[in-house]
Image (tube, rainbow, N blue to C red; front, side, top):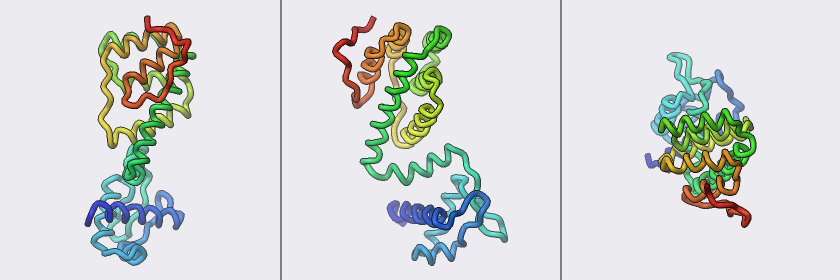
Length: 211
């Protein structure tokens, strides 16, 4: 079975679950019924169901059938990633949207950071215990917008399915601490976009140079 056919079967099973209004704890159609509804071989359906079971999305109860399980956020992200990130356009949109959300988070962090929070950032930098993910976890915590943070976490999980983690030099975090301490938002945004692959933000003319 080719990867394209495999993905199509997974998508079709997902649509059947959605159309039938099934929720966690409900029994899903049998292997034979799925095979008939999808008009594919039972071996192909069996392989797709095994993948869903491996992801923790369904469970097989001997003598009873197969049931939908409650699944964690990370597994859900992996499943959606298989469906959504098949298209190059969707992948490009993901990268662009993630960058825009990070810029917005940085804007809020620059406005709302406290002295204590800046000290926390400085400590992570001095201890060399900071990286791209931990920095933005700090950014969104400081920005104090829970919804924005949740959106970023979902986008970040999608991103990590198909991309390597960004590695910024320690100097990036050191400079970022300086401009955030001085609340120099244009410089913070410029520093971010200069270190990412696709600059999306134009620095205002009144931007000041880094200290």
